[in-house]
Image (cartoon, rainbow over all chains, first blue to last red; front, top):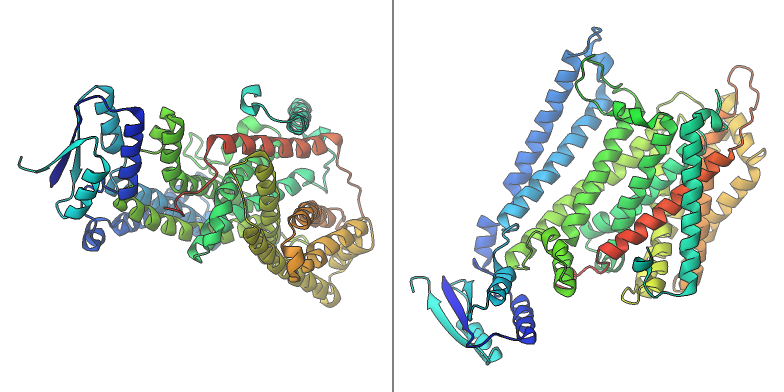
Length: 166
Length: 411
């Protein structure tokens, strides 16, 4: 990990702030953890969540049917309550919903959503509190020429790049 | 409302006045329905499903093209869909909500509508799982939830963009802290494809299940295996027509929203294809008439084509099966005005087609073979008009809240 420190000796203007945000969005500098494909395949995988949701959906629907048949007070046979078509519809409904919800939970968790104090919000916070520097975490594999680009782009700022240990 | 409207022209005031009038008519009809019960409608012991169920099927059908454009075309890698994807997704959600109101009226005592939800209770009474109406509940509620989830995930990056533009905190919260990193885009794309796959299965299943309301009954005219195909094709057909009309209206009201003629041309091609599918279903019906020995089936056919509904049937054939054939020619496909006119006619025609489909088998007394009377009352028409007003208003408000342009495509 490396840190980029945007050292501002003065409060930066609104326009400067906007240009930083735009630049960061375009250059994807907030890509904190790696941008290589190997990591995507290993860490950014929601297949397990989908599979979990799928299995849970089937289990819930089977339990639901069992509970419904078991709890009927007038002693109807299971066939009188659930035949093939309603069973399929109930399983289909619960499975789809459960898979979708589980996939969304996986998406939120893996893509680090709901992390309110990161990225542009962090920058915003620093500017609002009149801090005179901005810190961004970037991946250590991030190309050094890109960092040079940033330095050239933000000439109004003094930029320092530090390693994780510094 | 005035704040929402801003400095818009006089024709928009006329437009919104019409919407408000239709909503008032709908509310007054609702009041009369709940005050006097279903006796204030003209449905009777034979024609138990009237205008309301027709309208219910109509709105559920409208909801299908949204998912078709968003999910099915996403899986088929049709990138042109982005221009109208957001409009059609919003249309889906709003039309399902509108459709969901209709059964509440039909129940009569809407405050007991939660009885359809299967939940453990002190009497251990369960809903009838063998009833297609219960299947409807499962299918439509799952479809609504899934459509909202799909829309929300799809609009997530745009909400963040909107936050940066408007600086309204609510958009930041709704965007769940979206930053637009590579990881987030990567996962977003993956998840959308998975959800699209799930929704594609739902598109086919939901309207098939709605068609089961009729197909699994033993009533001649309804009891047919062609119904699921006919319902799904008809749903997407009418929904695409609604997408064309709404896109056109928004283009006129919102300067930032533009749909290219290329997209309209694509839509007209799909409309043409679905028209051919509907023609096939119609001819299957025709073959059934000539081959069946069931006298009631023959009577229904006579009512549809030579009796009370003959004018409507001719109109439906002209609009649904013949008029879209103009889209074989490029100059019609590329003419926006013609596309809008044809789409409007398709909407009217599809509603009428469903009306004939629902009512005509019910009009025959199976014991005496007499043809019975049914004319919708003012209240039933009032609820229909109100549903249109409600749909347009809710859709318009949602277009003001959510960004209409999809940025995920450009990103």
